[in-house]
Structures are given as C-alpha cells and as structure tokens.
Length: 135
Image 1 (tube, rainbow, N blue to C red):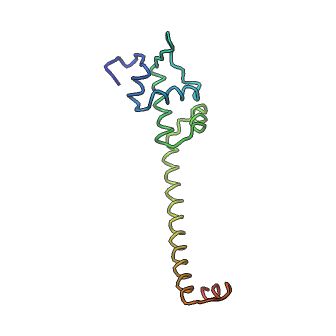
Image 2 (tube, one colour):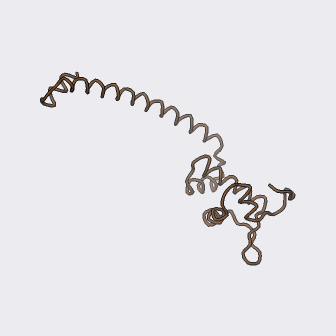
C-alpha cells in the first residue's frame, strides 16, 4: 500500500486508492457487510485495521472478479467458505454448457437454412406442405 508498517491502520482514502474502489463504495459495503467495521474517530473519520483491509480485498474480489452479488458474497462470507476452487469448477461447467449451446445453435442455423431453401421454392401453401417438404 504505502510506506506505513504492515500492521498500521489505513484511512479510507488510502484503502480506496490501494483497492481501486471509490470511497463511497467502501462506505456502502460497510452497511452491507456487518463484519466490516473500521474504527471511527472524531468527526466519523474511518481507520481500517489490517483485518478490515483483508476483508475488503475479499469482498472486492467476490463482487468484481468472481461475479457474486452482494447477497451471495454475504452468504459466502458468513458461511466461512472462502469460495476458492468453486470459481474454477463453476467456470469449467459454464464452458461445457456454453459448448453445448453453441452446438445446438449451429444445428438450429443449419435447420433454418434448410427451411429457407424449401420456402424459397414454395409460393403459397399450407404449413403442412412446408413441414412435409422439410422432412
């Protein structure tokens, strides 16, 4: 972060800059994640402990990198599960489903092409004629 000692408290602007998250977002996260409670001094000035900063990094990663919603991140953090490994397994499953969807899409496009070819040769007819000629 800065030239401060590792165990030193950080201001909201220092944490905001280090995490590349606006200060208003950090304040919002405080309202949503009850375990996040920086020390507040005169005038409401916030001082984040090293544990608070670690928690903020985890929250930022869950929301921005891993795609969790606030509610999902809350559940994950309160369950004690760190969520690591789930991201990789979920990604593999998504890739598999995406591949299946792309194969189905290719098949559907081929079917549409065949239907267009048949319809191009048909002037006016019933839907049954069209379906019979495709089969």
